[in-house]
Length: 329
Image (cartoon, rainbow, N blue to C red):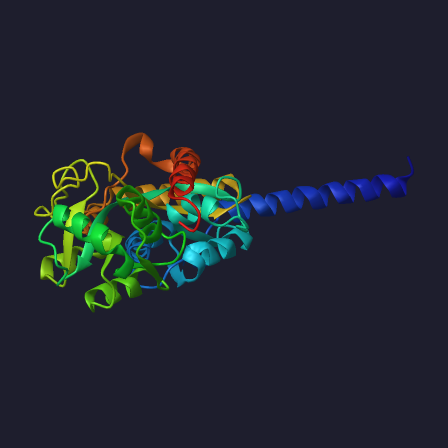
């Protein structure tokens, strides 16, 4: 081998080593600038609320601000698609949920991403129990009367939701399937606007996550007929479970979780997961979430591995539910 070739090979080796060292140093120093957390729904909705509470504490741990960016549209899939296509350097993450990272798969045949393969799971941030809700003057005093009234009048009723694929859509799809009714579904750009319509009496009923409704239920601006969990929730202790109220078939709870684009370096994933874990261990953060009725993940329900398994099982679950709902849902 000539001296010139040997020199060239040595120089190339030095460049590779230098690049590797620089990458490692950059990863170890991560983050060096603010991190964008995409919320695929409008500000004020349940996913947005959870993201801001969790992101606030993650900022303290990471030493850089976690900035919330609301990207609305198509039941959250617009924001999820943007997150999937973002640079996988750890500076863009998404607060996804049951809709964007599970139910969207069977609902959108041409979905631009695969929740199980196009993201690095970071961890579940909060579970969010679902309530059956109606406008404050809805003509039913309890869930049994609500069911009877919906069955008799579904053709004239309006159901609000935050877009096809959203939690409010899929969980009410399940309810409507159980009741065998098809009201007029009215979409909004986020659960916040949908809730405003319910409070204003512009729509008749909806299904929503508890973190979005505690103050409205307590203040009497909407009616809560049941919570779809095994036990009553401390945030709304006077709201009966769907089993107590006579509809035991309706059991459903949503979840919010943090994801990064596929290929995000493992050390970065680990740092993000650690920051989320510390947020969920913080007493003030926990109280803020629990006061909203959230179900916080503990033990083996936390972390990237648990979230990856959850996504796979939830895609399977909601595919069955949506298929059973039939054409046009």
